[in-house]
Amino acid sequence: MCGIVGYIGHRDAYPIVIKGLKRLEYRGYDSAGIALFDGNTLEVTKTKGKVADLERVALQKNSMKGSIGIGHTRWATHGVPNDVNSHPHYSNSGNLVIIHNGIIENYEPLKKELIARGYTFHSDTDTEVLINLIEDVQVNENISLEKAVQIALNQAIGAYAIAVFDKRVDGEVVVARLGSPLAIGVGENEFFIASDASPFIEYTSSAIYLEDGEMATISLQKEICVSKIKDGALVDPYIQKLQINLEQIEKGGFDHFMLKEIYEQPHAINDTFRGRLLPNEGVIKMAGIDDNIDKFLNAKRIIIVACGTSWHAGLVAEYIFEEFARIPVEVEYASEFRYRNPIINKDDILIAISQSGETADTMAAIKLAKQRGAFVFGVCNVVGSSISRETHAGAYTHAGPEIGVASTKAFTTQITVLALIALRLAKQKGSIDNSQYHYLLHEMEQMPSKVTETLEQNDLIEQIAEVYKDYSDCLYLGRGFNFPVALEGALKLKEISYIHAEGYPAAEMKHGPIALIDENMPVVVIATKKGHYEKVVSNIQEIKSRKGKVIGIVTKGDTSIKAIADHVIEIPETLEPFTPLLTTIPLQLFSYHIAVKLGKNVDQPRNLAKSVTVE
Ligand code: F6R
Image 1 (cartoon, helix red, strand yellow):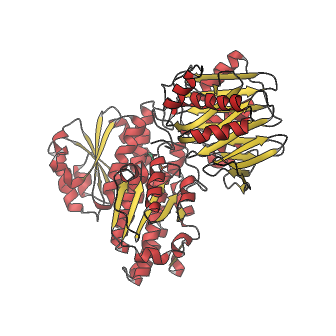
Image 2 (image 1 turned 45 degrees about the horizontal axis):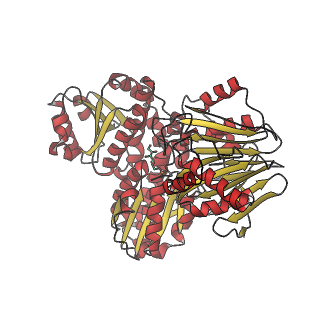
Image 3 (image 1 turned 135 degrees about the horizontal axis):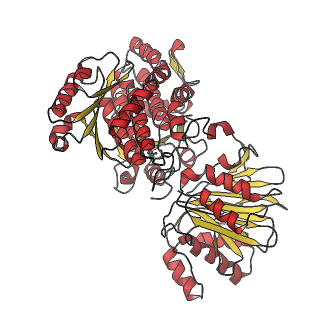
């Protein structure tokens, strides 16, 4: 939900900010803008469209000078995406300029008060209200920008990561965060500001991640001063060493990040295993679980909360936990859970799953569960993210940066982490016997190579995509462990190709969706050998006798389904609980190829953003 980038130092800010914005475009891409200051002139350039459009406008204006710059790529909340609503926004005097990721919820009453005091507004945004509020405080109290930002933010309700500067104070930018991420890259006499570290990793590996409720004044003269927004109390900044490198955030020869990330899955799952899955020793080591083992063993119930694809991973986990660890599991949309007065007991464990670790609804669900006394465990991909810090303990997925907006490797590595946890608990509880446990661990170790084998179906999947690219609907059916995969397959197709798709448990078809079936309805059926196979074969017969088109995801060597389906895509044989790690792959590739063939923007689908930091 919006990306922010800033630079303050001795270099030209323009190329650094523009390149940084391109890396953050996954966060929002409906408009972009930049403010540059060269010590004399403050120049704001902004436009509806992408960062590439911004570059064109800046080139025409020839406004690329300055060694202080702040830039923004927007995912619209208040006000349609147009030039005026794009960030940065000026204050009325033209002295202050701001970029903002988040929402100021009480902007309307604040705006009314400011209008009553003579302020005028050009945009429909909450951000323009905030910058004028800061100006109003600064002028009335005759105080520094830093102090004015602190006072103004105490009047604002909502979420924000902001960067503000005052053209009368050269070499200083004030930043603050609450509910939206903000990292400060610390170089030699230069500083970088960004929603995540990707815009500055080639310049510095040292970063300060502001905590919620913190602000910082970054000054070339006085370095960095971090303080609490609430009371201005000083905080000792903690400088971290970054773990990501440039290669990880570039496309590496692939046409799209999504395809690269699909192909990274064998490697990513191996990274998830590293140091944890030790089949020869018969051990699963996970510090977050080991340190809290009693809590897990005594838990009466596990509640999983997440959104979107992460929620689908939670559903797969429900089946896996109940199969192996025999602990009751409920899976909830975080957005529903947080608002429905849920019953949470002290001996419940809440597992929050989030790739970005920033999803606002998931974060709110965590806070609610904590207030009510539950132990909260996070499964996140982004190291140091807000959710990973808010939870009592957790396990990272270690999938590496996921930049394509459609989640792929995050999903399979989430399932991997959750399966490891389930097996770790099953062993400790004795809910599976020793030989079964050892067998499962060895089979699990095989999954990366089985994912690689599944990826070899890519050419066939591309051909099948060519056949179905112009259909307007698609059904996805699966049972048991693969019912959530059907949901995930449908979500992938919807979000990147804009084709209407629905996922259903296969047996539910006859309770309604079967009415949709005719020769215009392709149906993707996940029909692995051990997953209620005969029943799913009957479902396929039912579809075929109503002229539906069937694409079967089957176990290698299956001949029965091949005889009746229009197409089959094979996956290697594995234990049924692990099949989601394989059946997901063809569905990711199918949606990818359809979207490419339709000329859609695969990595940045319309209306979406990678981290959803607003409700
Ligand atoms: C779909 C997708 C979204 C996310 C959802 C949750 O491909 O990426 O549905 O899964 O927005 O995001 P995280 O996992 O970051 O909490």
